[in-house]
Image (cartoon, rainbow, N blue to C red; front, side, top):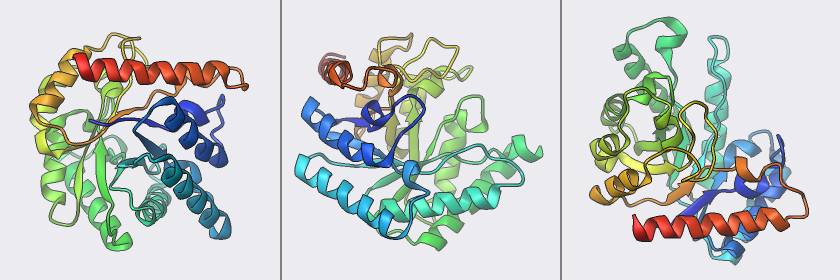
Amino acid sequence: MKLSTTLNIYSLLGSTNPPERMIEAVRVCAECGYDAVDIYIKGVVNLSGDELDRWIFDMQRAIDECGVSVSQCHLYFGKVEKDNLEEYEDKIAKTMVIADRMGIEWGVIHGIDYTKLFGVPLEETIRLNVEFFKRLQERVKPKTLGLAFENIMRHEFADPDTLIEICRRASEYGKVGVCWDTGHAQLSEGVDQGESIRKLGEWLKCLHIHDNHGRDDEHILPMMGTINWREIIGALRDIDYKGDFVYESGQPTKHLPEDDILRKELIRYSVSLGRYMLENF
């Protein structure tokens, strides 16, 4: 497995994540030892025209110059309400177009919990998400990009069986898989992470690796919380997982001083931690 990270481990400053800082984050993450990066495409959803073209050009140049790979990205996500479903789909489609232009293999999305929104049975939520996937495929017609549905805490999508059923049905219409978020799984009652990963098997295409203490979605580095990392990495080996080992752990660095001394030191530590886990667990 290649060791990768979302760019917000560097680019996130407090509550801001400026698009231009994501480009610098590629260089910093490569310098600190990462093999690959995960691009937060949601962060450029409001760019358009020449501004968007320039960002894509600069980002691609940084990736090429630094020699890192990009196998996955996070597409648009946000709070879904009954009255913003169309806007939500529009923004996912726009970020799909950007990711596909960049040749990225997988884009992570959050499915829509129609059961929570409208009180429909789980079977109907599955059917409607397959239709949602089909519309996106027909609208964007991606050349390289597949969509990976993420497990969401306290949500119909916490259950790997639900994710597998969506993938099974949606595969008729395009490239589809699952993103397993370890922090979300830790906060989902009754979810055994090793068992879930083994059950997902070949449907598992992406990872969001982060830790917590079982109460809040903290997005801290592995081994700073209570997740059993030996179990998770063992299960990934059991299924011969082919994707990257991707941190989504931007919280520990976001409030560090802007001179970057401590931020880079912590990023270098995160690389050492990841390599130790992948070599010894």
